[in-house]
Amino acid sequence: MENLDNVTLHAARLGNIAVLQELIERKVDVTIQDDKGYTPLILACYHNHYEAADLLLKAGADVNGHDFGGNTALMGACFKGYTDIAELLIENGADLNLQHGNGGTALMFAATFGRNDVVRLLLRHGADKTILDTRGLSVADLAVQQGNDEAIALLE
Image 1 (cartoon, one colour):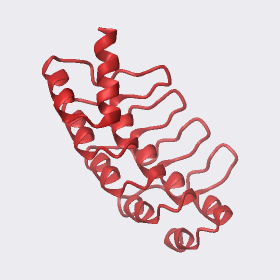
Image 2 (cartoon, helix red, strand yellow):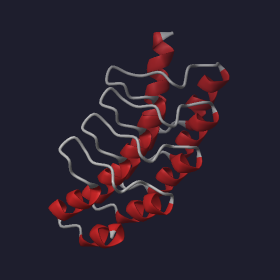
Image 3 (tube, one colour):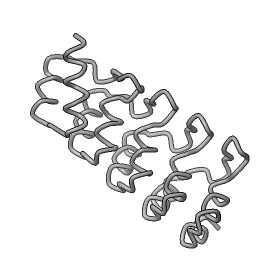
């Protein structure tokens, strides 16, 4: 089965819908993890494969599954600035306020990396802007550190 696991992860990374559909029909585990803890959903989202992410969610992928550092598919989409994928994940029940190993949230990723359309989306859906990371920093503190004036204004 390990070979099918590798094929599943690779197909998700590439966004290969035909292969993913066949694997899902063969009842592969869509919640598997690679040696870093990446799931097919995390890989599809990080590599901007909306259709693959949607297919995996419909097949039972864990929207809040995380890698070994605590990073979720939503965090990856926010880091990269993929608003449409972030919205898909939110519509499928993604927890906006999960924290990875250093206490960062999806909102913190978006504000730190200047993904202000994603900041707007997350705030509109109720992301908690009062959460602190392990250093005691809030999302507003991180936006200030990065000189992200637009995010600072959105967070006020």
